[in-house]
Image 1 (cartoon, rainbow, N blue to C red):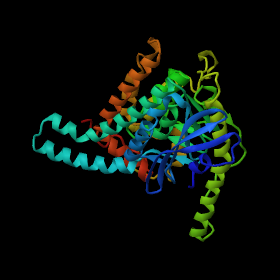
Image 2 (tube, rainbow, N blue to C red):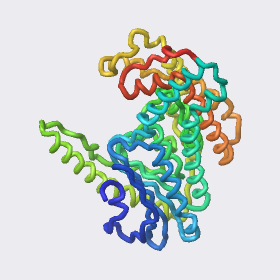
Image 3 (tube, rainbow, N blue to C red):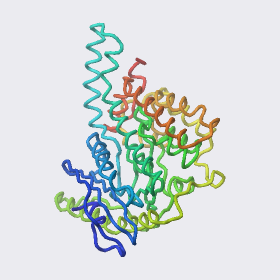
Image 4 (cartoon, one colour):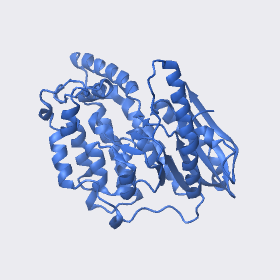
Length: 407
């Protein structure tokens, strides 16, 4: 098996052996495996997820994760750790926007028909229940990670390039994250018209504090490994000078693709192995997981700078004359202004964060916040401007969030 499961099922790691598969799911090129393993004298389970080339996490993958956790229930007393391991590829795109686009276009068309027919608001609202169901699956997965985290060590590896949206959120569900120095995270939802709906902001508050969580979610900036380590998101960063694989264009597309796939697998074999060993070391360390003390955390962006940035970027008129133009043609302007932020996303996010600083933050507070985070995200699925943001992201043009009036 290629990808991350190849390393998990290797015989090359000292004092490590695979005791047997517990669960396997595959759909096209995507797969999830759950293996029972032993490292030293301690046993645990490793989840390996792969969905090349950009590792989206669709509805069926979320369901598979939940099924995978269900296989662990009878084994609780024997397990010391759970590790979530994924590919070290250049991009992890998070939720499947094409999947969402199709459902959204259908729901919007039916909404227009029902509104013209005078249907009641509750019937129209129900058209977008598929968004709520997706968010509920994400919350269920978060709950599984946190439930098992109360019993044993949960560790995620984060190798390779940037994890956007849901791919960052799934990693954050673990207590500890082991990354390589090329890794990054981006809460990109506010550029689309959503907010992190699977608990990303709540988990970031727990690990990095509310100011850093706000800076990440409100600006949708890509935050790289060194910064993620000093704010407490990453618990360990393995240094590497190896660049991420790139696809060369020599005029022979098939040969170029084959070389690229081989380079990706070499990257997984080398860095994936190093990350997995580091995760196994953490998973079997009897000291237990700890959070970075608040006084040690660095501040990503001063809050007055965040205020100014989101005021500028969430105002659609900032981009007057640029709406609809390809990002390639507007690269200079985007570098100066930043990409547009969906005003409805910022409104929901700021309302969620308004009173966080006044609370004593506990596991129960985190869970309640993440519930509210999911409900707010569900409301955003019903905003007509979401279609604008998804199309702009998929088609790589400048979003015009004026286009659709408030519902």
